[in-house]
Image (cartoon, rainbow, N blue to C red):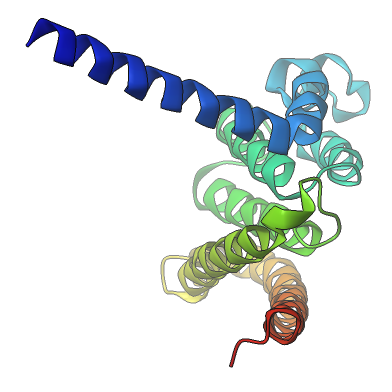
Amino acid sequence: MFRFLKWTFLILGTLGLLIMIFFYSQNRQDLHLYYFGKDSLSYNSVKNNCPQANQKYYFKCFIENFKKYLQEVSLTGTSLGLKSAFTFIDEDKLNNKAFKGIENDVRYALNHLKLNNLALDNATKRFHGFEFTYGGYIGKISDFNERANDFSLGIIEGLKSDSGIKALPLTLRDKYLIELQSLEFEFIKVSKTVQAWLDLQISELKDKHQVD
């Protein structure tokens, strides 16, 4: 019995190690890019390198760093960067001195929408992986697109509700409504572009492998 358990643990441990090695090999470039780029996405780093914010609101500096980071990564790096971006938003929302109350909620909901638009647009820009895993990459893009769409639609719905932009003072509503309309338009455009790209890639893969 002991020998059986020993061989079972040995086999499972070996399989786990092989899976980890394959994952690292497949995503090595993005993992390295994230490792060396994540400091530029951290709240403390942005705070210390954004004197123009006057210690009030650091998102404008952060989003420039995020755009530069996205220019190098594929889907894995985009997902990792987005997690860091959402962590930054949580800290900036809590600590900023530029917005309060409902306006603070609205401002950072719009910021979430901005980041999601950028990540969704970037996800299909480049592929850093083994050619034989490209079909799996397409499947992951499809899942990423679905989750990103649900996330953005939820934010848009919330901002359009009575507890969203409508709850702001009249003097603030127009500028936030205009920004929401712009971001919603951008989201719809990017979402349609990604879906068209997916449809084309799936069609080409089916033709390549002669699948109906």
